[in-house]
Image (tube, rainbow over all chains, first blue to last red; front, side):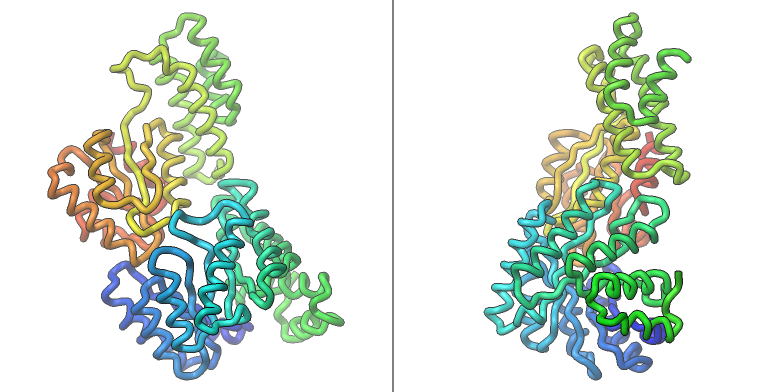
Length: 238
Length: 209
């Protein structure tokens, strides 16, 4: 699977081995990192909420600098994880979640992003190394949810110079029919607001097509070079 | 169509105001409040639950239906005697300590409400002690624990241990759920049942009562 995803154009491969039996997670993480590094040279994203598994994962990566996924402002999740990003010189995914949960408004999410940026700066981690995930809650639960995500992307890009943004795509369509349609159009709207990266299935050619087409349409893909390149590689599908 | 059928249909369509006004009309016509509940409102919401399970209705629609049911219950509640509680069972629900994720828990809560259960929502980051205190205060038939992080799953185990040690597990069914939680894990920590999703949670509780 990792091989297929690499060939399809993934920039990172996310590794999450959590099962709830916390004691096994660090050794499972070590096993997975070693195994995947045997089949691909693509950088890995170490995805864990356990500090110990995170450190083992980062330490084990031998080919490329991994991505730390993720730090947040939740109890125990901010300083220790930023310390690891400092120690292993990695970029990090940052979530605007705090003690009381996911802030409902874009303004409050931006405030948490700023707080994480400040803590990161104390460790010489520049905003360029932070990928803010504005958090995507299902449209089906509240019609305002996608707009809050889009507004958060826009505010982070405007107010935290250099910071990157990233989203997990599929959550937005949870509980609704024809999910792919919603996912793809939501992604296009987020890209227009300044989204830099998305977690998606790169072997899904129609979603990759929407990504390339959106970048061409909003003018970030100058002279449609990447769009045409993807076309010649057979990565686009109507 | 009878008035009861109209009420049931209005619940199924999520017509909040109509459910309220039709329920009021039913009472004015001399119908017994408990009968309106059991023969009009509940049959409506049960059909909603079934349709949700078959992907014929979707979350936003179910939320509207749950609100419509609530409008009906609010209308008839003052006319029910204390013994005729409008709810089939009482459920205490919450996300465990150090975990602030509430989306899944809220969906489960919605499905419980839509199935006519009384839900006491403790919110997020709820300690074992707070859960135990809520059990003593509310005496529910069911306790629902949610965790979204592998690092907070052990809190479920801690909570159940405390409940057992206080002798509060007697007559109480404990259910656990959340993205990383599995059936095996539920068994291991001594939970009574596990639900994979909100609809399964509601169906399991319905089956118990």
